[in-house]
Length: 389
Image (cartoon, rainbow, N blue to C red; front, side):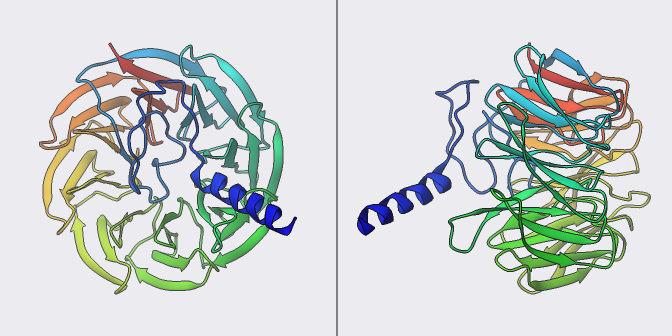
């Protein structure tokens, strides 16, 4: 009897760790996944993966077509998560929406008590999302039904991330708050596992890689902690407050700040390896990190692409207003929205415009890519979906 119980327990752990959601987009088009990118049939969280690199698998055509537009009640600063045939996104009208990505029709909505700038994260058929009402919510993806909510001490605008417990038998959710605390929450029970406090607001999402979480704050520091117990591993002063989220790749963290600097930090040595500085280019955007490039939007109305190894500029792309939106890399192209009201597709190698679409309203969220579609929210209160002509 004891042996049978042990076998069942082990099988349950295996199921948790090997879970892969089925996608109705194209069940036979499942790419091999790695730490930086997964199947183009899903986009389960902000910036695609726990390392927050903004790197997608799949390719984009040179021309896209507007497939549908979904109207919410206020500005959409949240970024979409996509699973199966549904996109999930928050709105400043205080609601989280599930949208059919084929028709653009609403499937369900869930109302919080304040704006939802946080981007959803989907794990095991549960959607985790924060709200400015100070709560982290866990919702059933099928119905939008509340499973639990966890209260922090102030608003949540950054997005949740996830990791496994040290024994690999549980999934934990990490979320930052304007109460200056990064929380680790048990994904099933909604109970706090640990917390880590800094001296100022946490605006962005934590990036997670190799058992470490890194995040910036309005204290100007990049903080690195152990996800196993929430203990400090490193603090690196970037020189100005950080509004965006870092990306982690190959033992390094990449982050922009308000002092016109994009920095690359070696996590092991706790040192800044290189700094890219551009006049009048305060960075609100989060960087996308590819094989050889780092791409980030600036408040100098430009998209900046620099070498990953040394931070030397490769190209800049000129928009008509600031680029607070966070870019993503899809194959040989970069996708980003701007305050000039345009969604851009840029050639990754040379920075030339491939395609653009005039929405007419600012986009400060990050685009999501799955099922061959780009989904992005805008300040006009709409969610837009673009696909192949």
